[in-house]
Length: 308
Image 1: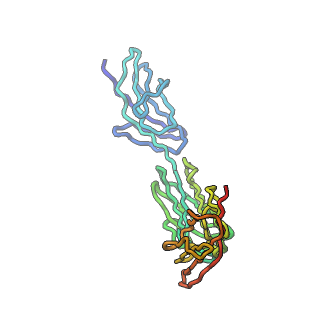
Image 2: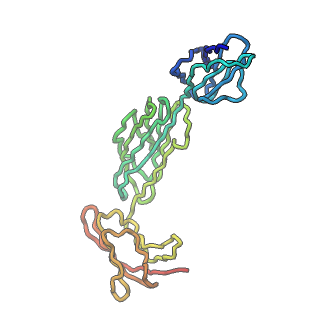
């Protein structure tokens, strides 16, 4: 029996649009979630066998197939004598979607109260089509002072009532845009804030539409007077808060007889735990050089306890 070549038409539901299948595939792009009806026409009384990406679709034998998934579709007509036609040409269905991602990162250097630093906010469209009216919102916390918009690679960014509003009219597929803002920490402590992004198109991954940054504003030097290196994760090491702000430092620790038992090699890394030493009271000398080059020193005592 001679096989017959199918004429393969596609009709979009809710739209008056028809396209004849071609080889190579003629893609049709539709918004995410839009059902697409594929129709096969062949002479005679036939049943049909549909394929997606080369694999037969189970329990589909009518001349029309409504699909909700992207793929390369083909159909075969089968007559009453169980003879099949050639497979139709391929018709490619592409669902348009967006996948907006925002990443917010603070400048990695150490800063103290009233020192300025920058945030870099990146918005990327990881989807397969352009997204429109993309808006990134970044409410600044009360312990942060906004200074200026340094640069926006796309769109327009403003600060309004403590909120950074970054508008991008059109963000193409697989494109990134970057915003840099300058701020100032008011007081010592942790600054936490979250940026959010959204656009007009359906977003298939909402998990990357927010990004939270945590920035420590370092205060004055604070030296503990006891450590308990017992492995419980609490006070196991001699940690000096604020030491990161100094461009140079050195630490020496002495026992009660004045013998040196520890000296930092280069800057102290907050890592002394009294290894190899017995419980008791020890004395330290901490020497510091500020960012401006001023020298200072701090002395005191530290008790080493090995709690069970």
